[in-house]
Length: 220
Length: 161
Image (cartoon, rainbow over all chains, first blue to last red; front, side, top):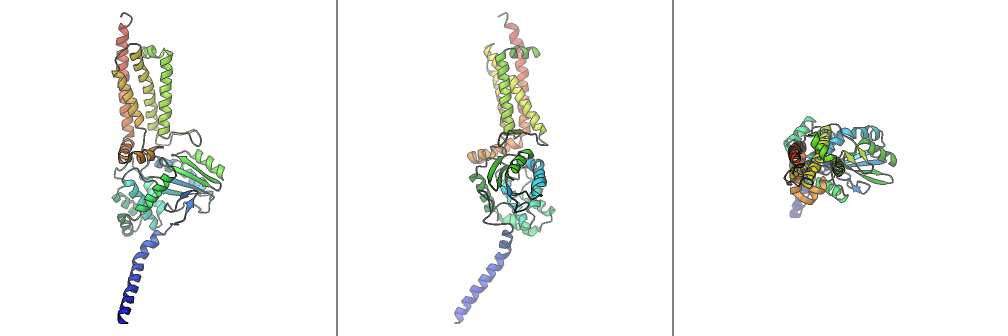
């Protein structure tokens, strides 16, 4: 009886300890992470949180790389008008899915964005990366130290962020996103899918606002 | 210099060749560098901050359209060596390859196909796109001046030969 009691006690303690250890990680992992989320034919479950109204009738899915110059061009030249005219008005929303392929720092930068998401600062971190992108791929601007410095400048909890980034806990998430791009025939970055109520349309490259406007207005 | 240009391009075939080279190079490079899009609509734009790259592409296309027909003229009409031709082709190819930026419309496809070698090559081309294009323009300019000098010297003796 005593022996059984001890065994049961050990099992109960082990379960409690296991739950206690896994709680912080699992709760942060599930932030903005809907495992069943899809837009059109694309699984965006492992992508960014939704920018804008989740109930918007149109979703822009962007496949991008933080070291990509054309993504930088799109971010600075086209996206602001889309945000103003379509996202802030509730006509569309946007999801960023990582196609991190340009260099060794690309997947690390993508992982860092999800470490920022753990602290509900995904889009702030995403914007910072595109604001501070430098011209050389793997030139050091997106290495681990700089990514931590960006996080610090945004006021993130650095203990949480550093342990997240150093553990590479989101590496599988990035691989999943890259596979989504591959499965959907994305040939370069940035690549877009505009998903509306009646279907989806693919757009390749950092196209100007006029093209997005035409496609979005047709779908509305 | 203008007489050499006049000599070559007064021949309609070389003028047409020049226009064809210019058009193909310009449109091809502008598509690769995402200044022109064909789908879903044909549209062109010059994003802010990329004006210098656009000027370099126009310069490479124009110089290639000038240098290549002049060298073909030398080979065909004057039966001269193909040595200077290689400078023009080399410069044109270097200028064109610089446009194969890894985050352009074919970047992911190139890297997926060629693996780490493709990734290294495209990263290099992306990082040094502008300097490579300037070097290409330099090669084409040097080829142009040496071709013009050759044409002047060679043509001087043609009528008497």
